[in-house]
Length: 156
Image 1 (tube, rainbow, N blue to C red):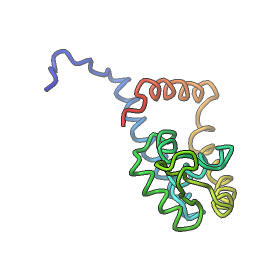
Image 2 (image 1 turned 60 degrees about the vertical axis):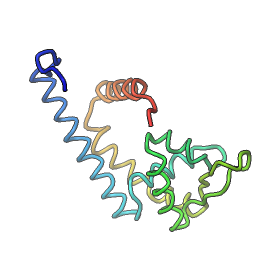
Image 3 (image 1 turned 180 degrees about the vertical axis):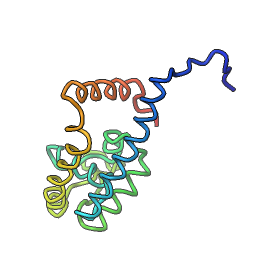
Image 4 (image 1 turned 90 degrees about the vertical axis):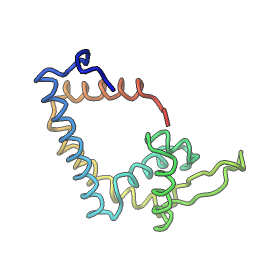
């Protein structure tokens, strides 16, 4: 159990910022997810998988690499890819260079889903986050969470 006498408690300004972060990110992700589902029939995690696959030069990634790029567990990515596979957006196959690995491959249907979903999603990200902050504040968000991601690494 932590010794409460030696804890580095947050001051009131830090506490307010922390709570704003928790509330804001929860609401942002819920809204982005809901709008993607309403407009495009896919969830935010499904959208992010399609994005990662589309950014790969071959349109495919090993499942472990995909999980790492999303900072999600392998089992979570497996379930999400299965949903995308069910709608024809992704196909899984054995890794051609290593028969033990599995590769997720973006299909033409998946690319079309992404093309149709992306404009509305990007508009929402701008409306709810990017345009709410000054360019300097938004750059600071990137620096802070880039540093956090680097500090925490991939401990799964």
